[in-house]
Length: 320
Image (cartoon, rainbow, N blue to C red; front, side, top):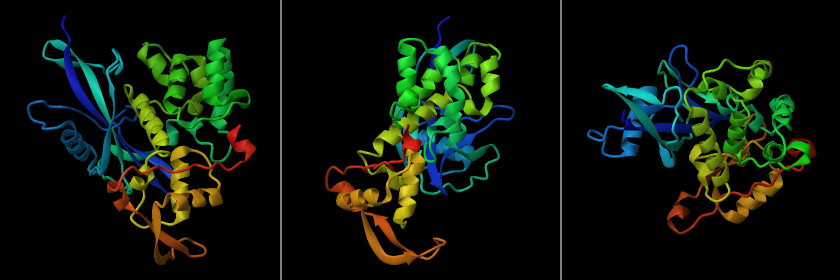
């Protein structure tokens, strides 16, 4: 039997609201959450991006702003158990082109099957803002039982075990190691097995599963975004037109999952000349009024523009 190849489009739409990083999800009745997804019609759709924008709006009633192509997901079985779609009397293998979308406004969509979700529900070990995550402490014994030799070295480096430094960019590698170790709920599902005792015991520490391989797609997007913070001013795509420096720092921390040194962050921001004051104060800070700033978007057309320096707050409990 010859398989038909179908092109799908997946959207990872991210926002920051009240110090939380959020992802736009869709959910069919009785199923785990997933990302907005649709099939590309080569006869009716002029471009991938236009098709993506149209079906995201149709599914979630949300209009996309900034988008960039993320990655093409084409491994055999990658979409299990939904990799095979019926196309007449033949099976169709789905190749998915992922897109990363960023928005400053996580407005309620009012679509019945869509919602904004804190992405830490899916990756609870990724937030180090308050120190070593409890989820990581919970899964560490299971990781050590699984890992031997090279596997233990990988686990140490990826999950900051035994004093190894934490690298916030390696979200995808951490998820893939958990999948390989059988500690991601999707691994048992894709093998057609019931969850083992370790999965049941660890529960929420392993994060919520998503349909097909959508958690892998989301992990890819988070890795891309965290890395890109440092070489492109992409964080401003999730900021409103006017913002305080405290709000900007909290947004960066929410995306990167780490705490930053306030004075060093502001000095680096000043040197980069990415923002300028608006000469007015934000009266809604809940404390002393703070100056409002804007991103100097006009510099994007003047040549290469760097990202942000992320000076860690040197609290040993939060990085080791």
